Amino acid sequence: FRQLYRYGTAGDNLLLSLGVLMAGVNGALFPCMALVFGDAIGAFAQADGGVDMDAVNQASLDYIYIAVALFITDYVAYVVFVNSSERQMKAL
Image 1 (cartoon, rainbow, N blue to C red):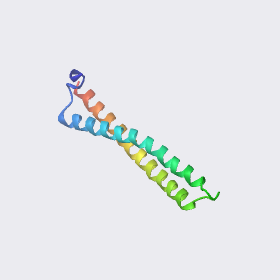
Image 2: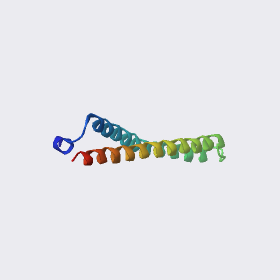
Image 3: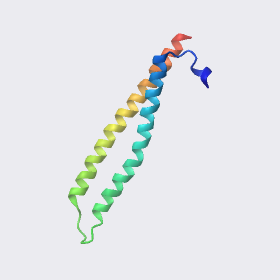
Image 4: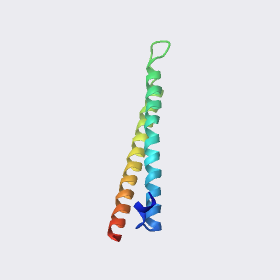
């Protein structure tokens, strides 16, 4: 496995580590969406038959925050992996 990255510099290894970290955070955010969805569904299932609009609004905001975080982490992971691989290919 180590031979695969033998042409990588310390900067490339740092970029790869950052990419793996961002990809991990991105993957961890997907279950958070299920938790927010559960909160939103729970807001519709009130004992009195009503809807807790405050909880629905909060769930909507949470979805937006998660979407922004997903976009940022996915974009950073992609750019970092591409940049690191291009730098290693130039070293060949």
